[in-house]
Amino acid sequence: MPEVTLRLLPQSQFYFWKPSYNDQISQVIHDKTVDGTVKRLSKHDITAMALNEIAADRKRGFFWYFKSRAEWLKSPMEALCPKSRVSPRPRADYPSLCYADYRWTDAAVTAFFETSHRSRYLACNGLINLGARDDAVYPIQYICDARMPLYATSPATLVVFANSKSFYIGDSPTIEQLVGLWSQKTRPKDPDLPLRLDRTPYLWKETSQGQTHTLSRLAVPGIEQLYHRIVQYCHSTPGRNDGISPVTVQKLRATFPRPPSSEPGIPLGVPLPETGEDAEERRRGAPHDFANPPSRRGTRLTRAVVDSDQEMLEE
Image (cartoon, rainbow, N blue to C red; front, side, top):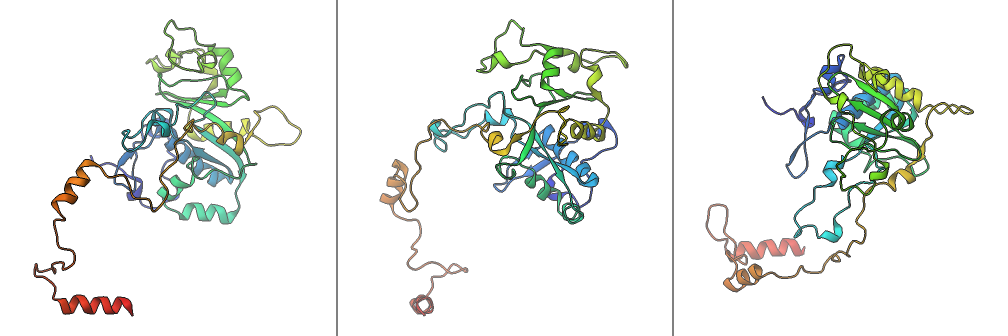
């Protein structure tokens, strides 16, 4: 079966918002980057795209996704990216998603639905297209695998679980009360281990229909219900304090991993250092005579043609 890529999706108002939960979480979408690499979209990327379709339809809210923790652990070879330029692993307060209580105008809704799905995907990339520094946003931890770490954060954040049967949503203090801090004998190499919450194996095991567990009361059956619960938690009604508090975009950006002491780059115009292979190639000479290059048919251009071209350039 051929891969479904964002570039090939036909333009439509809705694609990622699915009516059933199983259809919602089983989507597999790829994106072809500028260098030709094909990458699979993370589960929380797809969830952000679906939530934004609902948000535009309801004219309230906007969601951004962030690079996953697993992706931050990958880096190019040292020849391309020295160790001093490799970002450290994300800390406890680094989110998967964030939400802004944005109110859509009719023109904004029309513009959103007239754009391609890949344009929408780039627009909700939180690393490159977040709002102004003083805008209020609500960080969200998104857990869709038993191996993904979960943290108690300050200030409180939203936590969304997505297993094979349902979404679960709650604020981090509530999840901490229900789950507790890390109690396993294994001690991961995690600088934020004192803030790490315990495992939730009951979420990832196949259970019979109707069986309850610690987080059962936080379940929501589909993406539309998840959207409404997030809006309910992240309201911005003056004088009320029954949700969670936002942070500024400036504070959220401070959670992005950055190299601790990146070495200075090479200024523009400075030749790169010559390697042994470069010196050997220079010694052997260039493979073609560029002063008198071959034509398309393999014959050499005449001096008259070369001189004529030079005169045209000079004019």
